Length: 196
Image (cartoon, rainbow, N blue to C red; front, side, top):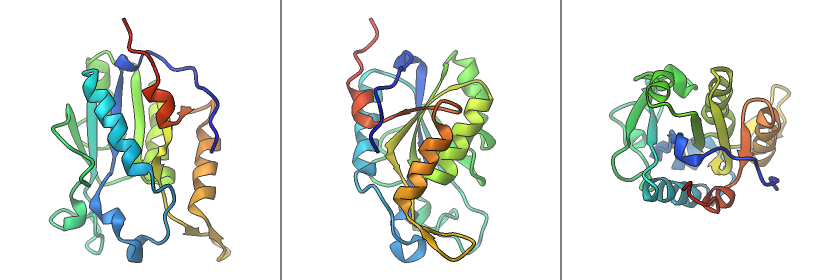
């Protein structure tokens, strides 16, 4: 999706939030057809950029309580993908969609550090990433949603028709735009000159 140049705040005051970038999502037999094969490379680029400028980084891991889920703790799918490297400033674990409902408390952590918000990237676009952006916006955080650093999967609608991952991503962008978040792509964030 073409995203117009966004009006971005000081990126030094935004934490990079990597949502559920876990190996379980590589299982096409379990999840189905995905979109955006560049997602992981874009995540790696954002992580390198945040680290280069000594900006805060948060990793989020979904620890499913469903005994049949490949995301449950103790399974290989619960581990982070190889692009998630190094030690984060904060590690959140959660059992639900919103990263603001995990442990430790993301909202409190951001406020204590006088950060104005977060940059959302990860998996999946229309579930945990979108939910986190909505809750973050409602809590008064400035949310930048990096659409091309997320991906999702085709879903079957209640009437049985298949909604493609690209369509779902476009709907997420539409839902968030100018209400819950500022939409951006990876290149736009990488091109922002550091604050002086």
